[in-house]
Length: 163
Image (cartoon, rainbow, N blue to C red; front, side):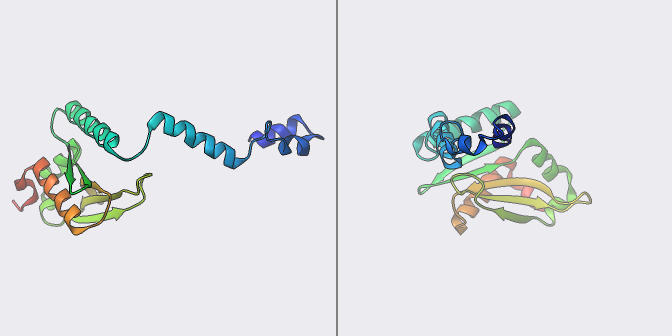
């Protein structure tokens, strides 16, 4: 849009204007400036600061919902986050079929840390309904197991067994 504005404003001089970096910076320059400002604002995406910030966000989320809806576990250098919103808890409790069939969907590269996101879903007449989320940095069996254990703690073991 900026180049179109320049072209309409500087009709005959357009090619001279876009060649001047002070008037029309390159895409790379804009990209570098964006990330320079982004890093100043949000700092590095890893390390102890990220863990502290994540714990604070979880605490605020749980306080806001007046119940424990998210848990974080640090397991041998790996972070495992489990989330079960109040709506997800209602699905687990009220939907009979949630105890019969449950499946997991996985996605990756969801953020700048290349986190793995696992959605636990149950079938319903309206389609798949989410009953939990696990976020880890790897797909190891241990991380998934620990995430499922956190979800059990959030919901109570009874909500994951048949009624």
